[in-house]
Image (cartoon, rainbow, N blue to C red; front, side):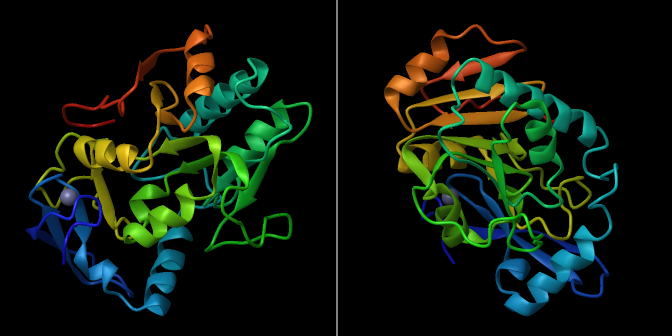
Length: 264
Ligand SMILES: [Zn+2]
């Protein structure tokens, strides 16, 4: 198997035994070139078992106010919602274009944003969990903004990445919250090796992806732990000209903010 980001060779990385109903010994691979780590076991798992595993794991925290991997989860969601609302106030996002929360789970973040806006703007979609008000399907180039929050670590290969990134319009913005490490620790006890996490991005892998999708500018909001990636040059310039609250890092390249452990 070759790396779906850079085409490099995958090498054995480590193994971990989860002792779950749907997941026992799990084998991880590491790309010698870009450092991407994937779970071979999860990538090769039959679709039905993968879905069952996701349910087994999600049921343990969705709808609650606590998450093992991120104890300050709720506070972060508030910061993300505030950031998004400010971007509406400052006209970076417009109520005239569609904003999608892809893989929204129980929809908490989208609800927080919509409660603060005069016209609710964020639409919800989740492949593994659906509610009557959620979109049932999404089509390419429909959205001015696509957000994934704690989703990218659950994706399986190029197909899943492509499914999401192609939803963004040619002048749209991608919002991303996941963990992106300088180097994935070769340590089975690392907190991010959780049962349904199957893809672990490095700064280098993300920079390659950023170039493949021809993003023009990138910003990272430290408090919200969220990246923004702009497809359109003039929208990026407009964003850069705004005076925004909080700590931001901005670059024409992918913002490789997390350089050393613990990467959060
Ligand atoms: Zn690679």
